[in-house]
Amino acid sequence: MTAEMYAEFAVREARGVSPVYERLASAVSRNEGLLELLAGLPAAKRQPNLLFGVVRLLGGPVEDAVAFHDFVVANWPEIEAEIRVRITQTNEAGRCAVLLPLLAALPQPLALLEVGASAGLCLYPDRYGYRYGDHAVGTGEPVLTCAATGLDLPVEPPRVVWRAGLDLNPLDVTEPADIGWLDALIWPEHDHRRARLRAAAALAATDPPLLVRGDLVDDLPALAAQAPADATLVGVPHLGAPSRTGAVAGGVRGDGHRPAGTLDRERERGRTAL
Ligand SMILES: C[S@@+](CC[C@H](N)C(=O)[O-])C[C@H]1O[C@@H](n2cnc3c(N)ncnc32)[C@H](O)[C@@H]1O
Image 1: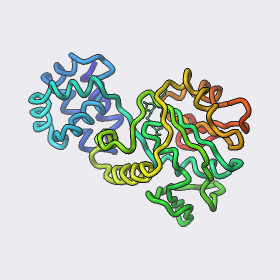
Image 2: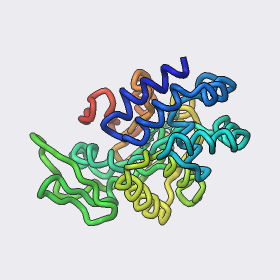
Image 3: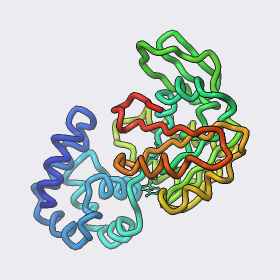
Image 4: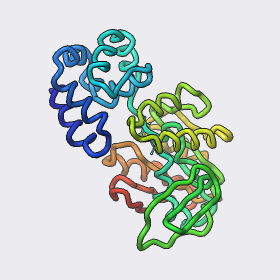
């Protein structure tokens, strides 16, 4: 079963995106010794991204399958301990480029509430710079590029007066170890994403967001209630669990606020819907 998971990861997720991880996942799927070590973990902890991310976090090699094997065998107690306490988390500021046209079209100012915020890097759509082809919006760093067709593109970024995030495991932008974990989870060849993470984290660290540890269903209404009533409250979910978006929309619709919307990037497969 773990062997199949790694073989499928190689073909379905890594192929065409990360030749390094395609080779590595394929090698792990055929390596009895590594599969035996993974079998000692809970099923949910055997995933390729978690193993590869932890090895990279600990400075191990992922380019060469033999060196990877030797590193994992030699350092298994430390690797296992990290795997057991960590979860895979991304935080992709680039998603703001997809959200920007809709955010800018809403009644301003905005109160942003992200569910599954990770380190909160998607809470700064007003601070980044954007390039949609020749069309530039904002002057901040990092500059986020995005193709856009059939859309009215904004001239100005939105005005955000309140930003907050909820996450089961919020990460701290001012804590190098937290940013190091996000960095380790970025796939090896994706240096542009690594540079974007560093730039966005540096920007967020100058004015860290309000991040609350909690679950989207139980803890969202209390956080939404803190938003200023004279701003448009917008819920931004990206959890990898689109089926729970209904609960998010319900939780954000706070009493006394301007009508709230929910931006669901997953359901719309990359496009943004209110
Ligand atoms: C794939 S990351 C996305 C992070 C960020 N929204 C982005 O777009 O870059 C998903 C995040 O959702 C959080 N998460 C998953 N289920 C959650 C839940 N039920 N309640 C709150 N946060 C949750 C995870 O801890 C993780 O940080």
